[in-house]
Image (cartoon, rainbow, N blue to C red; front, side):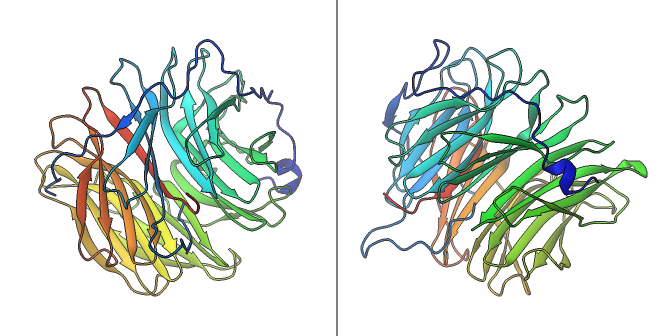
Length: 414
């Protein structure tokens, strides 16, 4: 792994920044309306934000939907703990818009996704400065290669915004980073990796000037193995220090990272063993040293790892296959990851549950997931006010098409 010298190189990617005037192939706010709320499902991290007494934190939700014959990006907002949702369609493209990710900072809402409207998979962004009422569009990449994978990842704090994704422009899958220091008005691109193997599935988190990125990377000494790598910047992304977090000889996949103060948490799936295992890494010194824990052995088909923090509360979700079905498991720790309690969030449904996203505010936990129980892929919302011991479920979508890939965040301003 080449160190800071390579990481500081500005990758020769043309950045095309669009104004709020949208091109003819792109429209915003096409559909407004209250989302359907029928039935119960049988089955980036928000901090300790405080709302005025009697008010609740707004919830923001994005997902992809192909009801109109093409996958488009949808947006929903709830100001009553998920009881009702106001939804709108953010895109109307000629191509496919998919795998959205979201970050919230105050009333600024940032949503990024993959899109092939321009003949190649690129990273697009929508930004709202008024809590989702109005939106401005930007195209973040214009590369000869593909910007793709399981979706980009985004984090924001203050006016600093960070987007990471996998890109094959160089002929190899590498991790790229876009940094904005002016709330998304302008961007600078960096190439974070320059490896002989494939680098993919990045995740980003931020705390002050400290930025953390994790990804999976093919091992130089074993083409069948992948490892989890960790990058840290203490100067807002100007320079980086790289660590390899794992030494196992199997496939280590889909890492995700979250941070609270100096506590950094990394979660991933390990295919080294007879069963797929979920591992959990914790650092209490900003990533200088680590403690690794084998969190759960699964029955296979494990995907959709999601992680949320609030103080010493750590919440982990994943989807796994059990008894011929896809179910969602929930693991919680109230002591910073020292001990854990494992629960099933969604089980024994007629359909399959998958693709989770979680946000937390103390003992209030909000989860979005995709489920086929209604006979179609729909987005469901689950809420717990007692740290995950009990849950209430709501169906957010009721569409003719497929609703998929939800991303959920808590807001800090209405």
